[in-house]
Image (cartoon, rainbow, N blue to C red; front, side):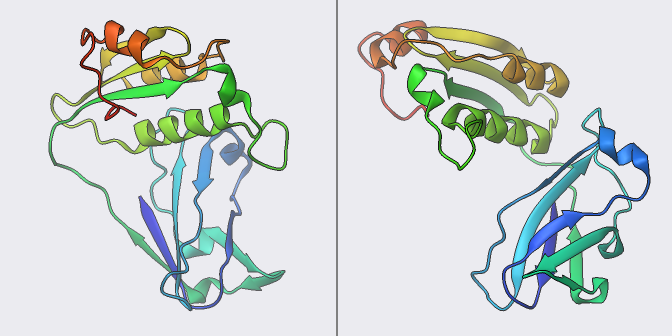
Length: 192
């Protein structure tokens, strides 16, 4: 994950790609953090069509605009880090796909709770370092629980399983999830 530090006000990060091929790649910039204002931090990720990080990006590859004014690349500091080792993890992503998740949360109709949950889950998978025996399973629920993807370390397969999820119609029931997870009557709301 890459970190930008900027010493003015809250800014918006816009990638100005060099070459047409970037249109097939993925770029995400995340909400700037102005907690240490006037320094502003924003994380971003840039990956190719196969979710492989794009190497060699520098401050000059970005355009930062603040209140309509382009900030010079010399005022942008970029710090890169890649984790090459760490703990092995077993993660179950549990995704609510009940009808209530169709609620609009942004200014555009396509900005729904379900879309944001799917984006956050995909972001987590994109950033997860699949070290050693690290594996992820994907479970969804509405009126029932569904195993969307069994344990795997195949990032692209996991991402596709999340992409293919569609909204259900029923409402959440803790008893159904508890039964599906084999914990009859002992389900605790610690799973989210």
